[in-house]
Length: 317
Ligand code: SF4
Image 1 (cartoon, rainbow, N blue to C red):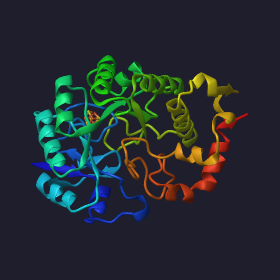
Image 2 (image 1 turned 135 degrees about the vertical axis):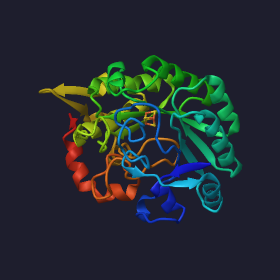
Image 3 (image 1 turned 180 degrees about the vertical axis):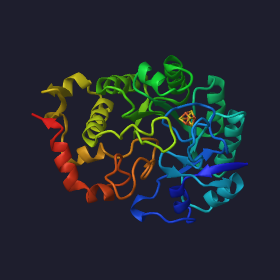
Image 4 (image 1 turned 30 degrees about the vertical axis):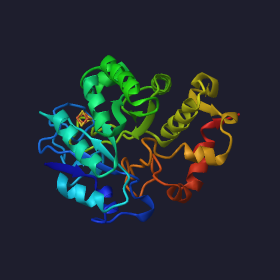
């Protein structure tokens, strides 16, 4: 059986090169299909409908490999967790079970990122060793979800998230949101709050225009907007209500300074959010650019001067 393995993961497994201060914290693999996923999500390179490279997801390259070869590499590595990204294709659930069982036999912990499936399947995945569930809600409102052509519909995703929390436990479901696909900031603040209240964790991605996809002409989100959402997510997940700490001045949203205790807390809010150890290095930007999500503290150090200026523009007394 063939799978795809992210280039950064191959570097960690010593079959490639990457910056040593930004290696993936876990291994990222994806189901393989030469034609891609049968859904139509308009931002995604895996959709069968677009003339995009099928060895990519976001801007990351995912070379193909035999599952058995990957399992051997995993056994001789220090990697503790594998994230399996599924795609929709004939028999993908059965195939995902097979991959999860093979990963679990190595002793690795398994995170599974999957579109809505019946609860009984989630129970089986849990028995097979999955301990974290990833859900690509991707959009912050029903309207945005329809615009980006996600399958299954808004309500079914929320039912799936809540079933996932019942089965895996609170904070063991990580819901992915893409910032910059046409939502309003208020949609995001409300959706992040609803996810917290449902018991889900939140993982933020920045929209990345991909050549050949339906959204290739849309621009990436402004860094100020992204930083604002990162800081707001941090505060919402800490238990604050966004209406307490967000204020508007001359048409711009700000965060009240008093809600952030110190500079180090600020920077930790800019790190990649996800399952334990997940850092997804350079998922949304090239290593030469300022990261939307920081994969390591060392890289935050490189960007501290720029970050201070950016963050000063978000806070207000
Ligand atoms: S379901 Fe997932 S993999 Fe398939 S097109 Fe949508 S985002 Fe891409």
